[in-house]
Amino acid sequence: MKRVHYAVIGLVLNSLAASTVLAVKAEPEALVLVTANNIHIDQISTKEVRKLFLGLPISREEHTLVAIANNSDPKLIQVFLQKVIFMSEHMYKRQLQLRRFQSGNRRIEGIKQIDQLVRILEDTPYSLTYMWSKTAKSFNQLHILKTLWVFPSN
Image (cartoon, rainbow, N blue to C red; front, side, top):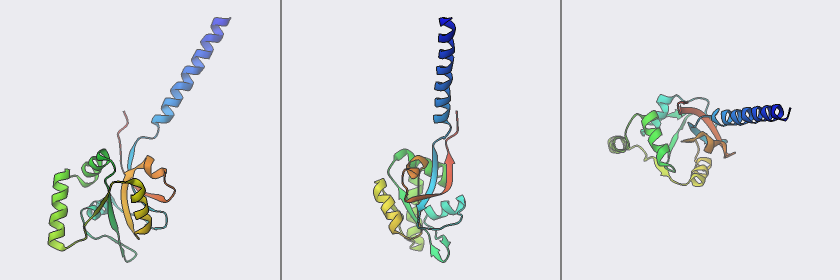
């Protein structure tokens, strides 16, 4: 009788452990586009995001959107450049320089500290940046506008 109880307890513990692992894996890591809560932007396409971060002007409600590069994590930068911009870091930097010299567009500011980035988003009207969804959800001041890319599930 005791063996049956231990077997049942073992099955219950195994299923609880498996459901916990599944719950943790249920939300894959995602790259998201964010702005401050006080900014109201209805929609933005991925094509517009690409243009914005390549230094081209994109407007909403007669306001020009401001791209701010999130340089806090090298993996984040690489994923953003490869999956959203479709360029290597070297080519991206060249494109930004070319566009700045050709059209005099504003330089895209890059910020390495997340807290500073959040403050700049709050203080700069119509500013946008990208970050991991987990990071964005940890700041009440931020609003996720769009999921740009999700890691494929295994």
